[in-house]
Each structure stands twice: as C-alpha cells, then as structure tokens.
Length: 462
Image 1 (cartoon, helix red, strand yellow):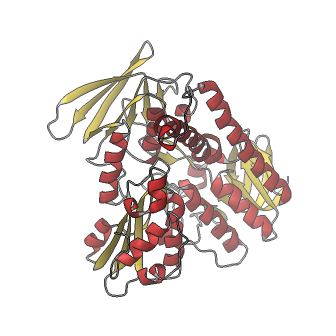
Image 2 (image 1 turned 180 degrees about the vertical axis):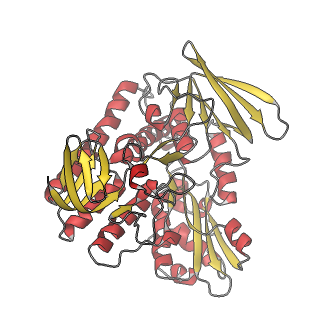
Image 3 (image 1 turned 30 degrees about the horizontal axis):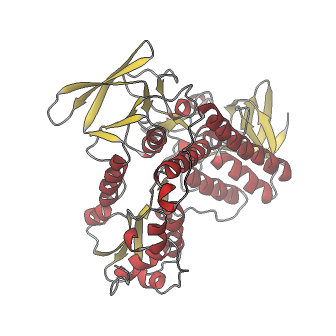
C-alpha cells in the first residue's frame, strides 16, 4: 500500500494544477485519472480542441471573406474535414503529453484508473488501495441533458460528440444559447451549416451584460446563425439519421418542430462524482448535487477536500486552477485564497466576448451608484485594419470613488484584453489609474484605455 501526503482525484485543470503546486511545496503527491490521457475534459474534449476548431474555421472565414479585400488573390481553399479533425487531435496530443512531462518533472505519480474512496484517507484505483493524509476531489463535470432528449453522440450530441462528427452537417440545431452552444455553433456555421440556436430564455449568454448579449446576437446573426428565443424544447426524435426537435414558444404556448442533420445539446454541465462512493462516506452535497465545502475547500468528511466543477461556483477551467493552487497551499500550511469577484469569463467566437466583475444589471439590483465608460472598436485603428471594428469595451466604476467594479468587452482579442482590468481590480485601481497608463499604439488594448477615459472627461477617439 503506497502512502502519499496528497492524492488528487482527476487530472483536469484543477486536479493537475493542484498536484503540481502541492509537489512544489514539498508534498508526496499522486493523481488518480481514468482517462488514457491527462488534462481532463478541458484538454481532451473541451477547451483546447474547441479552440483548435474555432481557430481553423476563423482562418477559413478570413480566406473567403477578407483575403481579396487585402489584395490576396487566388483560388479559395476547400475544407478537408478529416484533416481538420487530425489537426485538432494533434493539438490535444501536444497538450496532454505536456501534462505528463510536468508530472514527471515534479515527481507526481499517476495512478492510472478510476478512483473510489473506500474510507477517509484511502483511495482505491483498480485492485490497489493507497493511503493519503489528504484527498482532493477534482473529478470535474459532465454534460447535462434534457428530459425527452436521448444522446447518441452521432446525431444528437453533446460538446464531446460535436468535436468529432463523421461528416459536416447541412443543418444543425443547437439547444442552449450559452458559451458552449455558441462557440460550437459558430464553428459549424463557418463550415457551411445552417445553424439554429434554440434557447429557453429570452436572451443569449445569461449572466453576461445585457447590452453585450444583444450586440453579440446581432453579430452572430449577420454571420449566418439563426435564433429561436423563449423556446422550451419538449423532445428530440431521430429517424434514419435525421433529427426532429419539438419545442414550445413560451409566449403563446404554440408548438413547433425544426429538422436537422445534427442536434447539439448544450444545456449546461453537472458535477461528475459517479463511483467515488460519496454516499457511503457521508460527504454532504448541495441541492444541486455539488460537494459542499467550507472556505478552505474542506468537505464534511475530515481529510477530504474538493475543487472545480464538483463544488459551487462557475464551471470554468481557470477557476478550478485557482482553487487547485489555493487548496494545495492551504494543505501546506499557507494562506491559499481565491478572489471570486475577479474571475473572468470568455467566449471564443469571432468577435470574442469577455467579462469580469459586476454588470449593470447586478449593480442596479444592488442599488449601487456607478458610472459607465464605453468605447467602440470602430474608433480603434488596429481593429478597423483587421475587419474587426464591431463591438465595444464597457467599464463600470463606482460613481463616488471611481474604483473599477467590472468590465465587458465584445471585440478582437477580448479574452486577452480583459486581464488588464482583472489586474486593476485585484489592486483596487480606479478607472483614472487605467486611463493614465500608457498603452502602445496601434493596439486593441487602446480601446480599454479609451473606455477608462470615458469614465472621466471623455474618450479621445470617440
């Protein structure tokens, strides 16, 4: 029976980061992972492969829509779908092998197989049982479905199946207007599919800034995606490889059917704790099936901690990574901490959408006085040069103190631009602090400075 200071269950972003950080702090660490490769959902069937396809199809869009505008002439290339999938798989391989290298470098043991916790302080993987002073559950999440919708990962797929379709669909229905649905929907729209998004609510990307959501929908519609909002999906039936999606419009209870070659179910995710033996251990769960934890990520059973998608909070890889580092530091006797008020969210379409902190809606609900600084990318020379002038930056600041409360970006490189606001918020900076920081010209980042200026006397290029 092998003995460890820490055994982490799950080698996704939360788990492998936790393991490496704990090893750096001098612990003897093992990670139990049942996949054939490390990296969890994110590296294998989530964040990384989807970004590869988003990149490939954006290049296709540039060739067909913008090359001739720049004087680049020639025959327009066609899509070799198997080769595009092979490129995606190669990207996955490079990243997962990178985690293996990091495990070896940091002397982290990989326990290959699915884990069970027979009792506190013990983890069983296959026929072997290992002892650990502490256990961190980082087993992630799995796709959630809807009643009346059966997933076969061929015609009716989750995000996993959408990354490896045998052939390109002519018509695709996406159930769910959140991040995953819009990212994958935009991939197939660029590849020539007629994509229709069916969303239960009356808007896209719930929780994001309302003005951003409306602008986002308008831009995606211009790109060829259609939207049916306020629609409750009742059932999906498959016959001879074709799907029929039945839905009811909430405003008048009228019933409708839409046909498709492929249906992507993107209605969210749920914690994956199957097989861990949490019931037998008496680990307390929330009403939503998440592991209940305290401020130090400890569960109700001593010695068992949890992070990432299996606990409360946004299901984001970087949130799990932060928690992984924090719990490792706590177990090492340090003061690990995560600032949940400064966790950015990004949608990797073109244009990208990024946000951090408060929205106008949450500030109004809280009755907090605020001011808005807004700047359009049409005023940014770099954005116009690359045909990405649509969108804007919005910075929200306290009306009295000028302290930055949140930011929302729809435009080029939004997922990278948002981080200067994240850093500013971590240090309690004001909009004026950001506005007085020199930004290189010409860069997309100048739009961030202009929005900060607009919180004061006004932007220069507006």
